[in-house]
Length: 262
Image (cartoon, rainbow, N blue to C red; front, side, top):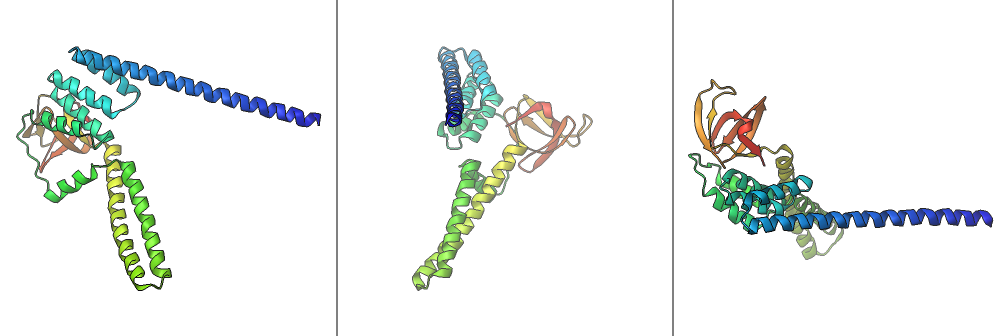
């Protein structure tokens, strides 16, 4: 009986320590959240008072701790107010990576892009542009969950088709199954595409005023075309300090220091 009491006491102490640990973790989390919110409010106050450079530095400090769509959006606004178009476009792009449905970020990005000057126009096939626009409407995790859900619906449809003898139900199940499978594959491909985009980070923004894209990865290469600050490019290859970029159907080499990956 005495041994059982000791065991119960040990269990009580362990549970007590666990409870204290959870309480301490909750307190620390709350403190960090309050501190972050306070810093965010201070940055917003600096922006409201016209101290855009100070606000941008505060927003960037918050982002160094934790990426956040709203903070990226505010950072883009602070950069835009300072006339730093490339950095504002970069911040809006990053905000949309985290929150694809942010209408304000989309509007401000389009407005900032309308202010840049460039002689390169996108020439992608319209279906490619359309498919990419649909892909960017949701996050990778959302597309993945949608793909799994539709695949489960496919399995249910197949099961009903095979096990049920009612004609109309079998027909309905068959059509539901193949349609769900089709959209499951599309959702899965979109999730995979977004994963590759965010893992490879092969999209970038030109951060220099004017950059000449060259025919080879060295200074002696022939100038092929000119890119301006704020232009979005796709990185196709990296050799040392040089990257091969594509804009529309134009490809050329430039130093990686002239751009920043989204």
